[in-house]
Image (tube, one colour):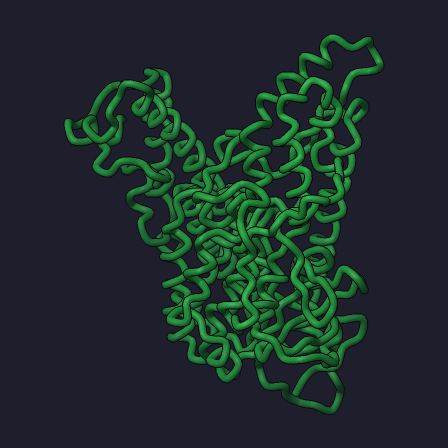
Length: 522
């Protein structure tokens, strides 16, 4: 039976002596940060032995949810999770998850040159008339570079539409997520995307064609990215089968928000829609992958997804941690809630002189954090086990094999902490290990950059053995960090040691496109 609810919280009804236990998972959104969830789930399946019958999820969490919800047997779910783990860790750079659209790629290429003109223009204006610096959204990779590696793609407007009315199911979802949007010649310019460029337009007349391509592309696509190659692997029929999901017996709810009505809706395991109170909505049955795509459509990053006449975006716009659906409406008595990002915001610099975009972005961050606090508080008050990070290992759009592994192992250890009788000192030890691995990754990246500087053959150096190239200071600090990491890993209780913990202080972290066979320099 399902528990009735009051204001979303489950209420135990008098007269019912027993309620059948029902295990469930609540998986929050977080983009590439889902690596934390993968690690936490590996611990829950392999060590704790969970057997969820209900899974509610938002955004990237819905990708994880659909992977494991295809089977009702916990062993099959664990095997599917292990396969997803390998696929997630195989990604090498951002373009595998986020492929920039043609217009945005052109903006990234031209942006540095135009920014120099804008900065020059700003420096020569009288006080009070300076152009505000506005950071272009989603332009920085994990190493701070202003360009994004992208698969070959035509310029905006140069690709014919690949929409095919004959495509159905998962193939239609893949086409919808990856196709480039054709740009009409008469598209209306909407300069909000490139305020910096327009403020110095008189200085950029020689690039007028590029500016038009960028503005028209932004206007037509309504997004900066399309799904990268990992989506085609996730939608391979050998990997995912919507009918197998529908018949597995696992109850699934994927959160998304309709822009026209503003309502929070959920897609079920059968591809139908329900409202936030789990009441069925009229409409046709869809392939569930379309709902997952909608749930992952972060506004401004991915294009909204049309379903039954409305356009849907990321469910995190309203509910990033859909615990109320699982606990209050689907009768979960033993909920496991796994988030992806830490609560709380780092103190920022003074906002007295910030521009309007900085103010808006900071305000959205505060609103999002407050909503997350409320959702976690609801879950805790309802008796859920909440597994959440305290350290932000990487951003939602950072795809680096080293950071993904650090975050996955952090998720594993965080779940182990929740399920072990350890004290504050062990908790602090886990956080110390995570920070040491992050610092080690940064130093290794600096060392590798020195090895692959112009004129050096990294592959030849790897074959010839260890080299003392790069900054001696970097190598010295790296040796010190790795020594501390090895000591901390040795002190970590065995119950909190994920696979590979004994190598943390003795081997290099993973790095995208790095040559094989490198000998650590310490």
